[in-house]
Amino acid sequence: MFSFSSSSRSNMDVVMCGCSLQASLQTSWVNEDSGRRFYRCHNFKENGCGFFRWLDPPFCPRAREVIYGLKADFKNSKDEIHELKYKLLKKELETKSKEAKKLRNELECTKKGGLFLHFVVIVVIVLAMKLLI
Ligand SMILES: [Zn+2]
Image 1 (cartoon, rainbow, N blue to C red):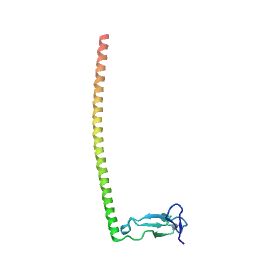
Image 2: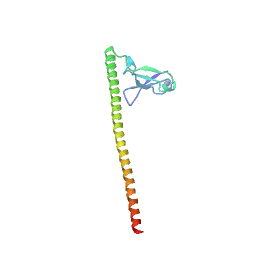
Image 3: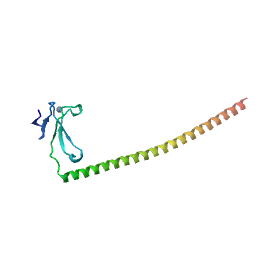
Image 4: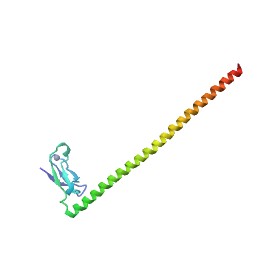
């Protein structure tokens, strides 16, 4: 039902699943098997043939311990990166909010200045008309 054959492109064996397709080579990240490679049915997402076979033998307890520690360090680093990204975005948002407030104030001042200029122009026109009359 399942077969092995050699690939001319690499030293890895090509493993075929029951669907007559090349089995998918993947790496487990589940607890004691973290880092251990396995083959599974190419169509596993669509309820394929159910083929599954380990490529690597089980790791020794020391290797499992080291991998577990590395996974924990990696998770902590990812959490720290997320936290730093959040702080950075929050800081950028505060800066942009301050800039927007400053621009709103400038716009308000410009509007008030524009109204005053209109008032001066109207007064000048009225005075000029009075002089002409
Ligand atoms: Zn299959």
